[in-house]
Image 1 (cartoon, rainbow, N blue to C red):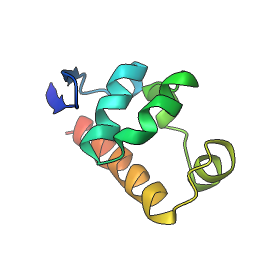
Image 2 (image 1 turned 180 degrees about the vertical axis):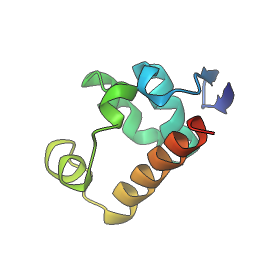
Image 3 (image 1 turned 90 degrees about the vertical axis):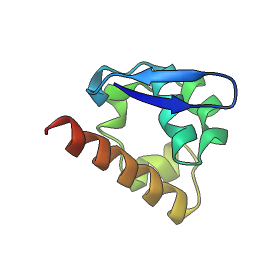
Length: 87
């Protein structure tokens, strides 16, 4: 398990991203420096299973993440977690 530090608490993540709850997703966002997006992800009940299906279009049009850099950073972080779980 990975320990992620958020502004209020430490969250332990399951190694399987698809099993993450919205709090674990929030922890990953914080780790990536995108913690300010956590409230939006939690309010929309985005869990680890949902993360596996996100793409640039969904992030931009449905989740209103306008910055290409932020979308790219998030998708790269998701991919890295998925690669690590397969090891």
